[in-house]
Image 1 (cartoon, one colour):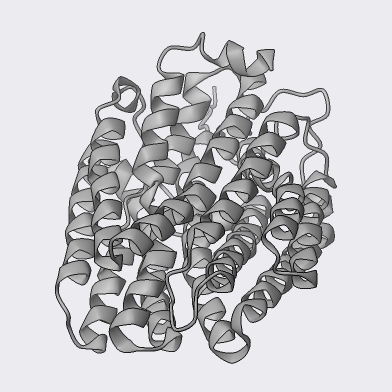
Image 2 (cartoon, one colour):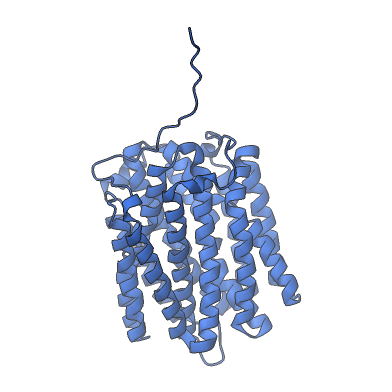
Length: 407
């Protein structure tokens, strides 16, 4: 564990880590809260899935665009504007009952104004620590990220079950504003200037590593959104949709497994086969959920599956940092962030339809299917994966055309 202790010797690392975690926290809450809020308001999960789908479209557009805007106007102005606008729109959905079509439009704007926290912080990390500490930092970030993707839904379930789904949306908006302010005020944010991209939007997708990482991120995170919805439904009482404390316990244990896996496995040298092995571990735990919905069984198998979760996220970040030039990492992480955010919405939407058709097991099947696709992609693309055994993470050198005058 000394590798993580050494990170603290770099000024500002833990502040950036903690503040970006709080700023991104709402993203782990929103999918399940919006799913439950719209279901309660309009009477079916399919309507909720449609709203989440429109949100995902906005997020798909927002990710790479907002990353490029940070290179034009700076990180702080873009992050400040998007955080305020996105939080205000969430409050509107929470407190005003509107026709479904209008809510879908607002959800699209929520996705469009999603703060680009992920590309911002992933661009900062290589400037905060030396290359030999970047892998442990990504690992620690991935382990802490489980608070977003797994503990976030736990808090979402607790708030919605004890108060209301409207209260849950307002809590998410509060996290977005307060966490965003903390992250934006970090001194490190003013020390890194993103240069305006000289290539067209999407040019970074010419890197196979970026495409692979984005697609894997989409299916991987979508699987979590699906199983979270399934777990919530599994412990909901007759006629209820908000779940119970049991679902929160199961999801917390899932997060615990991921935290342990991130700290023990995530910092290890990445090999071409590492990503596939970590995904297969998560898949095994997910499929085992179909054997029984008993709380103790779910806790056991999801803890095991969780051991591969944070290490997979760490591998995704490591792949990009090792394969993409620093000047293009912001947009690269923007595309990956889009993949993850769209994955959350898509997984929840598919799970909502599956729950209407086959109850909780239907959502678990959806989650397992998404992970199967994810694993197959990781296996089929191993030749493009970096082999970092015994190496520090260093991005490719910046190159360009140099004019040499003739004598």
